[in-house]
Image 1 (cartoon, rainbow, N blue to C red):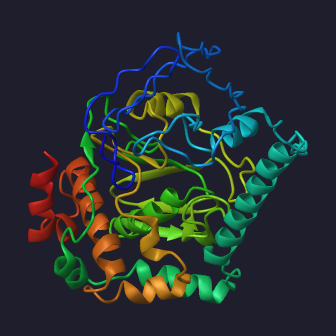
Image 2 (spheres, rainbow, N blue to C red; image 1 turned 180 degrees about the horizontal axis):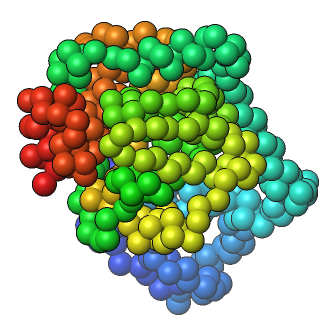
Length: 361
């Protein structure tokens, strides 16, 4: 029989003899099931075969079935790291150290601190942007402001027209409202703290001054803690009004610090309840022909200005203040003219007022 070259496997299948092990072919990836070795018997008529004790199988690291397998060569059926993985699986996991928990009071304390910062920031910004209240005017300065705004020329009113004023005048129906002397009455209901009342007094004073004269008008400003704080204005608190054509009844319910001042009569309160159910101030009733609730322009128009600065701005028909305030005064004038039967003609007969009367209905 020819010798086998190299380590190549046998070309033909070898059948095991009696008592021998099966031989694994080189092209087989599997290994035969181990077989119990027994002591070989001597063939009949021959010499005895010496017995060789089986040696213990020793694993060969990283051994794989990659060729012919020889007799008595143990083969590890898997990679050498299997045992290492098995040992790793049995290795006890390290015990985690307990982590200290955040105290329960930390979250509420953080929320409270955050709110405190927000509140402080709000008051700081409010203090920074709030205009300071104007110092009280002397009697001479106060009179100069009143004189300036109550003696504007007709050309000023005609140049402005309605301007930028919002027409908030609404027709109402009811018994004619007349004053103690039987003339058509203008009823004003407001408060000194109110910034919208502060804005509306400027055009109301200007419009009424075209039909009569004031005395006792004083300057003041709205509340420093309300919206549009410290809006410069006038007050009807101690004012009196005289006119050949109409009468004025004004109620200032509180001062700029919300202290009570004046109260409406029962009939006046009934007017408020009937024509101003929402309780909006200022409220103006013009002889039960027209009613106005709220301001006809934004109080911010005169925000941060002095009384004299407002009076000076009204002399320029192109100024923001003149277009808002004089425009509102023209609308109020047109409503009063409707209540007085267009008297006096020098005020009500002009083209500007006649055109605005048509808008009122």
